Length: 423
Ligand SMILES: Cc1cc2nc3c(=O)[nH]c(=O)nc-3n(C[C@H](O)[C@H](O)[C@H](O)COP(=O)(O)OP(=O)(O)OC[C@H]3O[C@@H](n4cnc5c(N)ncnc54)[C@H](O)[C@@H]3O)c2cc1C
Image 1 (spheres, rainbow, N blue to C red):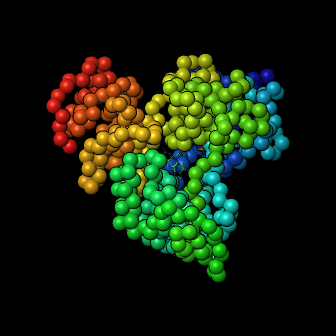
Image 2 (cartoon, rainbow, N blue to C red):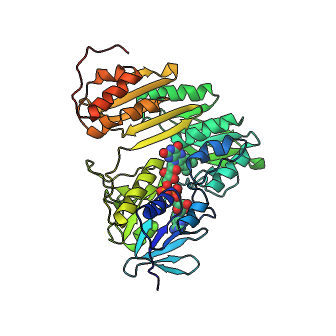
Image 3 (cartoon, helix red, strand yellow):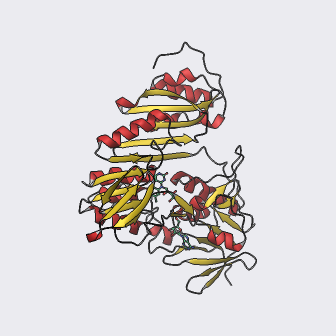
């Protein structure tokens, strides 16, 4: 009889990369991947970008379709897992099937956080988490509607830019007084805000939604304490809830704020169950509390770590978090994590369309933000990995010198002390 092998619950980014990595590690057992969507694993980042604006829908495959057959990976689409039995080592599916496993990997991602007064499924209300969600919004944008976006986070703002590009009239309603103020230094936030206004968006900042009334012909009236507006379509982009219900019900440890609790190697509290991607909350070396990172890079890296741990190989240490977003024609990248009380030094000028901020504590770089300067940010990654104080004036050097300096630092050579340059 064939051994049950690995059952992967979820068929998104992390699931696909983990399955592939298992084969790369030489795992020869059965791999079954269960996805409740009707699609094979696909990339989500384009859903709020190219899928909404490109003349043709771009290819979204995480891997070419033949990879599944070549890798002997059984991808079962439209298959929802509804229960996990830790002691019996099995997964129960919505259709009644029970799949035994030797090892299980949870890669269930998350759900768009719901707003009670604008539930998913109501006509003209949109959430953008799945390909089908994005296709529905794309179709609605064809009519160049008036659109209200609830939430001025990265996702809401990407959708705002995309909707503007299709000719829609866009209002963004955000409860904070400035955009992305938890993630960006104030100068970068101000630059983002002015760019969005220049692109034609109407921003209601510091505005809390109070109610939505349905008007004739499906239009909606949104009332906030900072003013009211009417819209043909409403997009809700107020965050993500990790899909940890299966783990919770099975008795696995789940973090206080949500997310399947995993260690640095993506092991859960059960030795045969691993988890990776948006559904996790990871205890990372050097950080007191477990954290949830909802990003493409995190999904990929945790997937590789989980696969390594599952075959008993040494898993790479978690990398410094990296994230990108495209805001209209601008690319923003972030390295490390923001934290209260960081001081920022700036290189370049956002008015020229290119700038880099380094958030540091006592000269130790902890958070980098690049506007159209991702290559420069990536070049100085070693400085974030080292976690040691650096000479901040060195950041002002030109791109080639900056790279050479970071390379020198990576080699462990102390930096040459030179007179500070002006920006
Ligand atoms: C619109 C959008 C834009 C984004 N843009 C960026 C970006 O610019 N930069 C960036 O870094 N990140 C971006 N992200 C985030 C990135 O795509 C996610 O972090 C990544 O997809 C997480 O991968 P995952 O495999 O953990 O989860 P997912 O990709 O969500 O996959 C989880 C899958 O599991 C399935 N599933 C859940 N429960 C079950 C179950 N019980 N049984 C079977 N299947 C189940 C789900 O249906 C889903 O298909 C974006 C995300 C979205 C939605």
